[in-house]
Length: 297
Image (cartoon, rainbow, N blue to C red; front, side):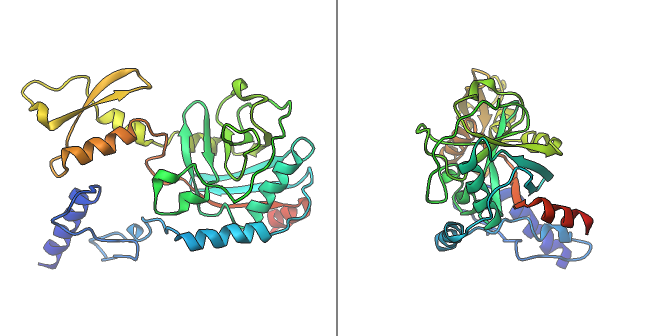
């Protein structure tokens, strides 16, 4: 009987966990752990990210603002630990001193820890560093910053594979905390964005990240070129796939309202957001001596 009850609970999670509509079966939060040997595996315990409240985000921003880093040197090493592996990078303080100092301030104050790569574009780049990727609203990812901006330091270093460059808005002097790493050469960005570093080791981690399914790829895979014969058209929605420049049709799941599903899918078909969390676990800029001591331990 106990096993039967547990299976019913899990069925409720699977069938209803992704809907925003009113539920008849309650959703169960596994983030605090539900480990029943032989029935529920223990590795489900940490499936949910810890989301921050606004005052917690403000505290992180204030800590970064108050933090005074050591001057950046050309032999400093950046260690970036991600959910897909660890990369080693170097900075270019001779070419972009203000950006390198800003990055070191944010990294060593802990600002980047726990943020996400919130945007990935295969064949182009991965983007992260937004503190708002740690709150409970995925719609604002890509809009956050540390509370200050850094003026542009455009230079002659080309945007090639593995380059670390700074994201910005239409204003050239609007860089804050968001950065991107090129997955492939992107010469159209040269002289338009500030290059301030590059990946030295484990650039394949960038490939692992960029090959993660996105909300777009999920929505596109669920689409069909036409409504199958015999299907009720009222149970389907139409979407425009702008990347493939064609209309597709997607069937409304049994347990969702059509309006809710259509709203969700129209957002996803235009989204570069990863379908799975791509966490930046920790970023630190180490002096050559500190890096050597770390390697020798």
